[in-house]
Image 1 (cartoon, rainbow, N blue to C red):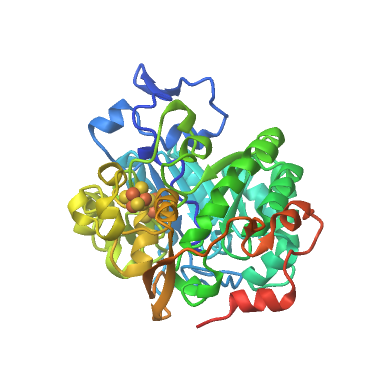
Image 2 (cartoon, protein in one colour):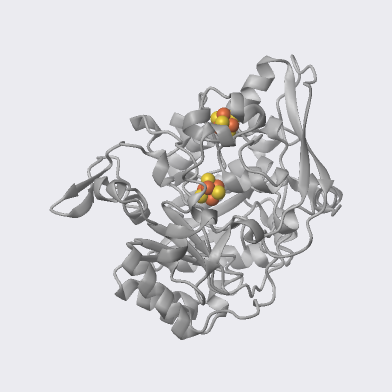
Length: 471
Ligand code: SF4
Ligand code: SF4
């Protein structure tokens, strides 16, 4: 269920020397008075010892591709299990290898992780090995029994995917009733000792519903909201009308700041912008965790601080990266340490320089720090990393020139898990907007702000169909 994946946020690289984490007597501790109690804030952040010898701290592990939803934006095109998914014994060996590598946190995903009968055995072993374990889920069948299993296995966080109000969510998830199931599961988790989090895809359907969704999260008792822009991967690559245009970031970012300040902070929900919500400009310090301390985005951490694994044993630097180009090896053939240290697919990203960037990113003021933003996002558009139009700094620079960028689909995705199509980035004159009413994904701001959590959707049926059509 990539596009749904819990991405490595807060990015370890995004808090360089922010000193929220200190090592005292060989143990990492949080020093900042701002610490929110989110255990991930501690374990995913590199401390001084880690920086001496970088190694993966955080792993997102797809333990099966089997899924009980049919999401229209699913990057891994989940449904049936993969051929050759790892056995229980092989999974437990992976857990031990990750422990020995120094990994501190693992998020289990699918497909739907709980559809493996042994998911709680794997989770229990992760806990026993001293690592933090969580799960990201669509939660269609996250029953009380499974929540109880998760508590017994020591899960710290369950992040449930909610992509808008009821009809908007159900249309994207491909199953009527999936929104109601996610809400009921959220209540079960909130009533348990496990920390409830929520994750949301931002696209042209969900964008105008974000303010109402923020209210809903407060009502549900969610402690954290991870948001990320839907990337042109897998089934989302088949639906270009669903994808935000890069110039729509000019609507998204001020809206996010307003939501954070007026709804999330009073409601006790912490915002975690995913690694493709970037970069710099007037918003980073307002949105990104640690930004108020002077921390900022410092580039993609795939392979250095993070790993992604697929259910058949593929190892990648990031769970979302396309499998065909970014798999370093299989755990059936090589040790994970060997893959991490010696394969070009994993070492390449941390070795990236400005010379590897192209297009606007190559000339950007922030190029040597940012290195083109999220590899996943840029690679899935162009088949080549290092030129990322989904950037607020870039959108604002273009706006100053009276221009804007639009993505146009040029070639289809082949139809495999974690695949991508090809898109052109077109530079065009920005339409005159002065004096016009503010719009959010084509909806008036007034309509957006009036939307209530009990409303089924801001969209009519035809608009939803139009945005989900394939091409
Ligand atoms: S334009 Fe590219 S290099 Fe510059 S900040 Fe944006 S993503 Fe980073
Ligand atoms: S590709 Fe890099 S920046 Fe993007 S989600 Fe993965 S680790 Fe984060």
